[in-house]
Length: 97
Image (tube, helix red, strand yellow):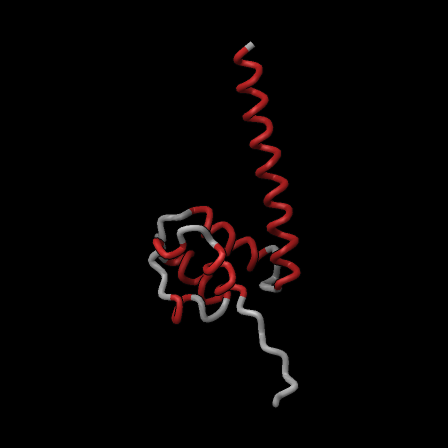
């Protein structure tokens, strides 16, 4: 038995977790072999899903392609999205009154 730790494939984790990923034009064996391959796919081709592209690009750029960086980047993105969503909801409430 080997003592080497198995490398975490962030690209595959993202693909498997993303809702409706099966609709994306992605070959999991080729395009999800690692995060760099997935970044190449989403930046060089129109995959038709800006959010998926954003997630991959942010994890590579801001998260330095590491699992801990990916978590931090997505936590920040979630806070940013929540702030915008709250502002939109508040604007709708104000309009109703």
